[in-house]
Length: 134
Image (tube, rainbow, N blue to C red; front, side, top):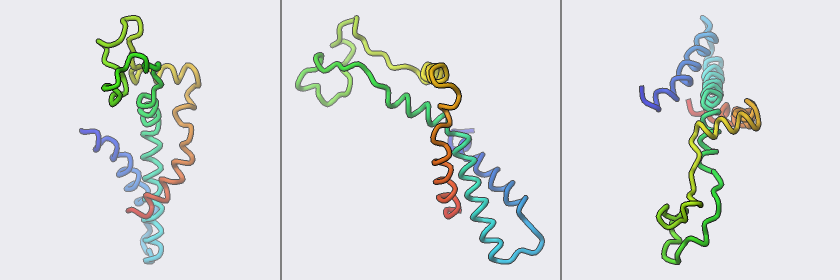
């Protein structure tokens, strides 16, 4: 199973399950359209809720604040964000934290809630976006 299949499976299953729960024997076209919108919206919310903690960790890994190394750069090296390790003194070597280290830090400092902060706003957006895309 690849990453795309893994992240889309909650969406697929939540859509199919909610669609089956909402199915009635005699549906009008209006009821069918409403069902598709609601099930699509729920699928979007379930998808985001299932991957939101991973998205928080990914964002924190990508936005790590590293020490300023401007004094170690040359004029021709301004295009790179970090100096090459060979250009830095051994005492100032920059090391990025791994995803696991960031996860531990986040949990220790801010608790489990940090992984879901902002999920309600994201879920509201996901509901509307996915309701109309189905």
